[in-house]
Image (tube, rainbow, N blue to C red; front, side, top):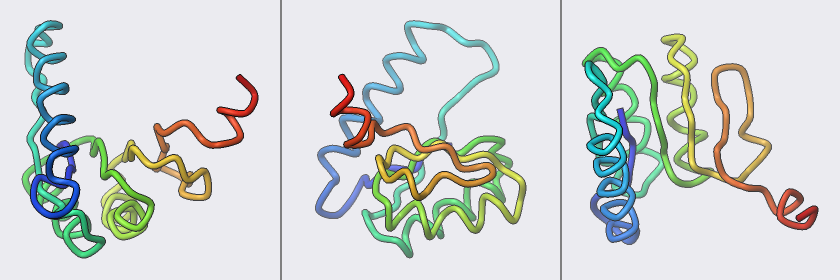
Length: 112
């Protein structure tokens, strides 16, 4: 599942990320693989609900959500169901068992 803010203040960013994911999937042509988008609304509560909904629908991996607050909220649902989560946050403090942040941290940027 792809957890993104498709409504709310970050909806434009969420839609752009969804478009990019769909394009990448189309170009790579991975049979049997699909991103099922879930709207977080850009809120912690929305992210938790999106994670639970995706897991209940059979998601085996959660990609997203976008922010640290959303990640904190969604991570408990992911861990409770042993579903790995790849959030886009750059908050290294979010890293935990089954939660692997994808964002580049400020420290990583400084080393470049």
